[in-house]
Image (tube, rainbow, N blue to C red):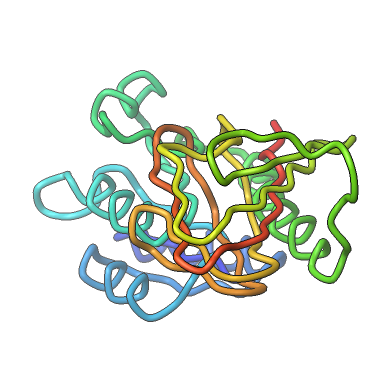
Length: 216
């Protein structure tokens, strides 16, 4: 598990890297170009970016859109109000907003939320799917929800959904077959993050997957 930190203030970036690296390896980027390059090369459990990075002040939005395409969560760090962040990012919505100046515990708690989500989901690899209580969620799609919020989904080959069955933000792992979300493909035992909102989910060969909602 790895975190991508995007901040153009070198001294602030250094301090944040030192802080976050206590929880996970960190790849740092000082510009939008560096951040987009990192997103092409690696998959991150969390992307933390400044809102107004870059000459145009639109860097946070550009990075969020790129990370969203790669099915990775994004936290925006900004001195702006949460309402202003949402307005600037519309129609996209960040997965978390951290106000500047932030408290150390706030940043540590943020990173822990997303790392824990991925850890909990990936621990389900190798577990057998429930045998009973499956219900048809759509044509060719069956689902069952267990205590603790685990949502199991089985999709037949060639089926699709206009949006994930988990309505909110969630982490998911593919257990069998493969899955595509807005064209981004994940295969057996690969993790993906689903942001809130409509995302087309489809499978060519069929799949079994399990997801957990993001807490907090």
